[in-house]
Length: 399
Ligand code: C5P
Image (cartoon, rainbow, N blue to C red; front, side, top):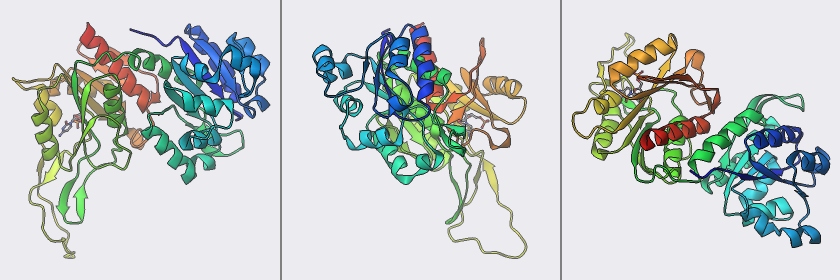
């Protein structure tokens, strides 16, 4: 497999720029050659000399520098790399990228590149939540730009919240995961289905049984399997997040609908059941709104089909690899191991959801369980979990 050997690191002007110095070192530890562009405001926080000394390469800053342009023009700079990493990325560069402005070397290179771009935002919490920033990010995600972070925590400005630049180790890990995935398309001859999101079981026209699942993890998995070349279908319950770009999307409401589509899609090579399927459905959905009686009511419920179990235990057209999730509030490992056997799937990705952890968050802490392997993965973004899982899937099929 091809590996990422060259990264063009764009350092923009935020206090987190000091972290990019450590990032250069850690990337170099992985034998990755790092060339840097330091924006004008970036150089208010770190000096070109520190960046050049640590990267061991010339530092580029100026679009109109004749010497630089004659040695390595900005178009070449944007193409002669395997990946562009913008870290830290300020609100300003994110906005410029979204709108395609190019008034300095960094933004011009970003416009001229044909390479994968990863953005690591770092900004004040209010700037992060500002609707303009969020709009710009959605535009960039649609354009195929990836994001790492931001993290939640204390900020240099004294506030608390989302906006901290992700830790160096997490950035390096995400890049290593990407290393094995994006450049090659190791899953290109395989087909995959992913279930994601909650299901919605209607009680009456205005009420339903559902759960807090955001769909983020399943969507990230569908995206990364697609990016690695798998012919991917995402079967999703109702969510409020942007759909992945590339996979075929089938929207469903109920568990029964999810099962029907899942079975219709067989045979596939890979099935990942990340949906939080409602365990129960209402036996007779009321056509009219249930009125208050003053005495309470009871709902007549029956168990929904277990999609994961049904496809794992099929005699015909069983996918070669079936992956399930286990959200546990106690005895994580033991319950997940029991689930692996009970459902008959090949791998389980277990996570601790006690005290409402994980649902809707951007990070996940996974315990990976198969018949002969048990691994605790570091806490990482749901995108990184998706890439790590996809790389495991790739290894499984190439073995
Ligand atoms: O039994 P439990 O809901 O904890 O199992 C979780 C795993 O089973 C997840 O992978 C989920 O997508 C899958 N599941 C399913 N159909 C159900 C219930 C769970 O596919 N009805």
